[in-house]
Length: 112
Image (cartoon, rainbow, N blue to C red; front, top):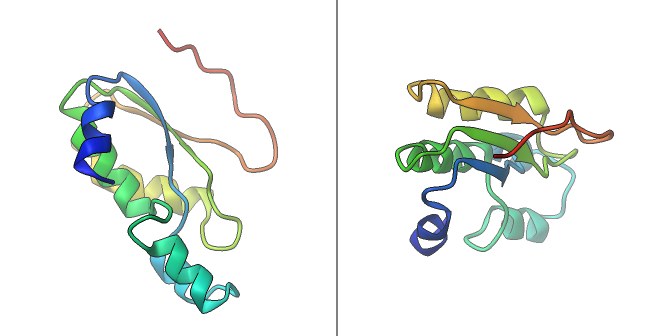
């Protein structure tokens, strides 16, 4: 997550944010080494931890709701993504965190 992108997201109240992988699960996944490097590289996907740090950073500019999306079936679990991100934002009061299901529609959200 770059400072430039963070600056564009500041003052958002709601966000859909990728929480694609867990580094330990990715390490032992069946993906080829080159794909693992691309996923975890600087221009790759967001890990659960980076998603949590991003949300904690944005909370200070008014973020109140987040929906975690684009979770890898190969290197992540919804419960793990939620727990990892929640641990990073646990000090954020009145924050609503949800995880989008992989295989069916999520509940409806109202964005104001």
